[in-house]
Amino acid sequence: MLILWHGLSICPAAEVRIVEWESRSTTAPVTGLGREAEAWLPTFRLALETLPESAIVGLALSQPAMLGLPPDQANGLLPLVSRRYEMMAVDPVYARVPSALPYCFAAIQPPKGRATVYVPDGLTPATKFMVFLHGYGGSFLWYQHYLSERFPDRVILCPAFGISGGSMSVTYVREAIRAVQAQLGWKPGRAPDLMGLSAGGFGASVIFNSSPSDFRSLLVLAAYPPVAVEASILGKANAAFLAGDQEAFVLDGRWRRWQEIQRKRPRAGAVFSLVPGGGHFFMLTHADETTQWLQQRLK
Image 1 (cartoon, rainbow, N blue to C red):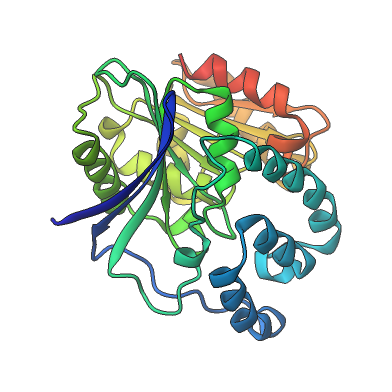
Image 2 (image 1 turned 90 degrees about the vertical axis):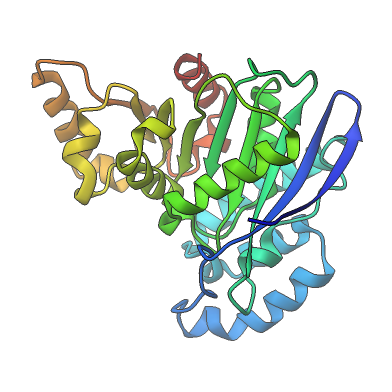
């Protein structure tokens, strides 16, 4: 496999790299967005080629159908995300990192895989490693900035995969891991933790279930185990799920059912935790609670 890359060594203490590799596991162009979103897609793709990611996300949130969001959620999310981009603009590590969104919304199926990788200073085999699968809407750079702010001593790999990480395959993730290790000349001393957000959480659950030995743990934010893998995932003690207590799948009783199943199990299994007062975007609205939970799981 031929691996192509270009690095962005922005700060002596850390860097962000864009890694690409030849792949047959990329996803086809986005379809089925609905009439309103499809009408905006050409304009959106043009914006992707000319505007910074902060402006692109603002445009998308002004037309929330592009991201599959109701208007009230988009309005609440916009100031939170805007603040994150303001922080990135003055961060020497992230200020010049290119967006993955043009790749995610490509008009043709990409011949290469793509990932954004945060690399901490002093990389050694003991450096911990995290793989993060993005949710619906594409691989936004603020996801990685958020995680690197809280876990600055870890390698953080964010594969880009079309508009949703929910259908990412284990083959694609393995390719990304191999590509990063090859370009860094680095072999970690332990398997990476696998984290997924929203749609990426569903994808991460399926990937983890199909190849648990490839990962040290599964952490899912704002999602739950898909039905096809639920029984298996519930039995894995190194799997954990975090959701806001205002999520529909919590309010309708499904979360309580999973917790009840776990309480009756003879052996430890997956952990289900809630963020009080949190909705779907608790990662931003309840950042401290989210960080504390992640730190407890990522040891």
